[in-house]
Image 1: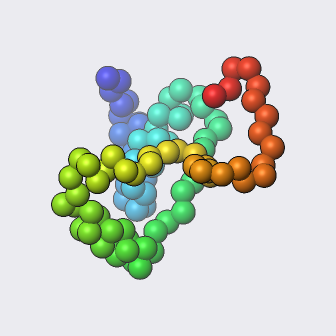
Image 2: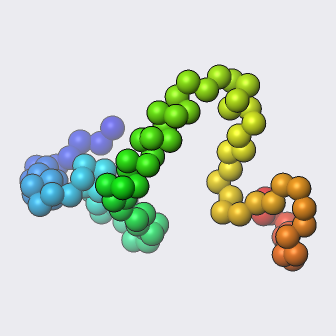
Image 3: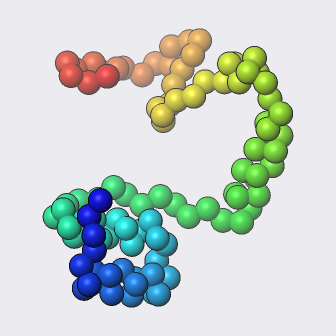
Length: 97
């Protein structure tokens, strides 16, 4: 684990006092240290209604057993089709999934 120099500590403290979340401060400090300049797109902030809906969903599904969870499809894909062709043309290139 790398130790922060005295200057970096003061910079991190300043960023935290400005109200940045710890994860963003950590990211800023590590980006500067490793000279990475291109970052992923920021995620949208969730509003109160969305957080409430997510909490209700979690409470509803908290008591599910393994059999029920086996029927759920977990995927990082934006779109997927299970039982019929959706008319989209797919191109598979070597080296891609």
